[in-house]
Image (cartoon, rainbow, N blue to C red; front, side, top):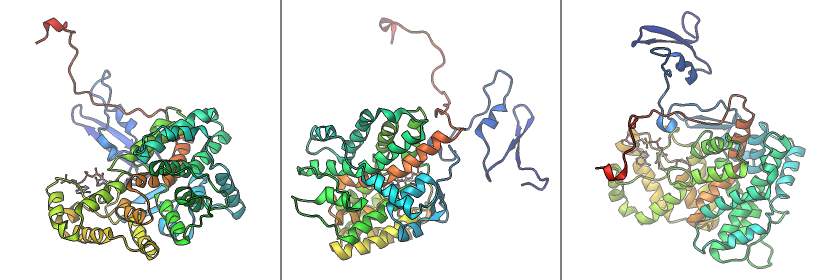
Length: 433
Ligand code: CMC
């Protein structure tokens, strides 16, 4: 609020000498549509904001996830990520993100029951799995399977029916691990393993991945819990590239399976959720601590990027990366130390002290250490982005439903600044230069 008690922004258009007063709300926010009144004359379209890559544009008001990038703070529905990672479970966090409040015991039991009893997928999906080449990337396979699920659930189009929305949410959260495990087993040439209802969300996932023959499969509880913590850390991250894709596709009222397949495609890129895979490939390529100085010179010359570093929002240490680093120690107690850790630690040490990285606020992000853990747990690199997509399914769906219920949202449709040719007449091909 200004000295005069006003919560407004005064703008003078020096082209016309006219003054405008625009409301400020939610702290520091103006509505882009309020700029439209600024015109040179009545025929003018009006002022717009130009913001490639949305670096300074809020596309929604949201109550789901809070990030303070300057101070490395992340909260889901107000709860600090550190407390959730320490004391909660992925499905409890899923309930929190989807419903807005932590569940009571009966509510949690019911939610876990619903998820557990929707883990099976239609048998025809197994034929789809078999159609992929043996070396198909797991992310492409799972994305395709998620899109295919749309054809099995016509009721998913009933977006205005809360019950229909909820059942799709349950199905997607429940089936993603099954689809991911199918992709892995196909890649390995192993028979598919069906879900087991007695196991927890992550134990069942590990069983579908690693169980061999008819023997009972009991995952190591440390690894089961570590995966659960990793899932909590990846469950939501407000308006990132894939979540924006989910909201954008959903805004056309596509069903959630198709929207989520689009979000997964956005996640796949190496600058987003594909970064965990890219980090592992980078560490393997560096090969030994001795090769780090030469590699870092290449990064500083911008010949390549230090994958797993940097973030659009965090200008401090990513709080998820700190928790993952601690989780890595627990996992390595069981699996043995991943030798790539030495390279990663040395890269981090250099990056935290050298001007290039310090000046640009480049800190490790969530993807820097997660891959090292996944590899130690026996996952091939192609599964890493899928391991991101499974928990993020919860966030995508929470954000999708928030978008649908937000009266201010309509079909998403950015404007452009046209800088191409003016109108010109078609020239027959024989007359062209
Ligand atoms: N290595 C080297 N230089 C970097 C890096 C990096 N990883 N990230 C940013 N920079 C430099 C960049 O060259 C630019 O330098 P200059 O100012 O001289 O032009 C400056 O830092 C700002 O970078 P930017 O590309 O404008 O930043 P952005 O906000 O557009 O990009 C990012 C954010 C995450 C895409 C980027 O930091 C990056 O490519 N990181 C590596 C990929 C990665 O780890 N992605 C996972 C992100 S976290 C999880 C998720 O979202 O999925």
